[in-house]
Length: 88
Image (cartoon, rainbow, N blue to C red):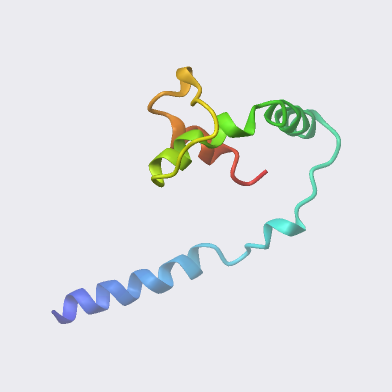
């Protein structure tokens, strides 16, 4: 039992020692270049999607009536695909 407690608390503080030089994501600014271009293009394309169809699998999973039909080619990937765009 004592070993388990020591191992648990050692793991809690190990993460702090591994990443001592972290900073908030809000302090990051993407400058002009291929990565910013790709990010901007991704946002433009995402904004062209039908929101009701994008949200359909999440509403269905929550037991609510979707306002649109799910994208058929995203069948089984609904949560996975949505997770890629939750930060935009």
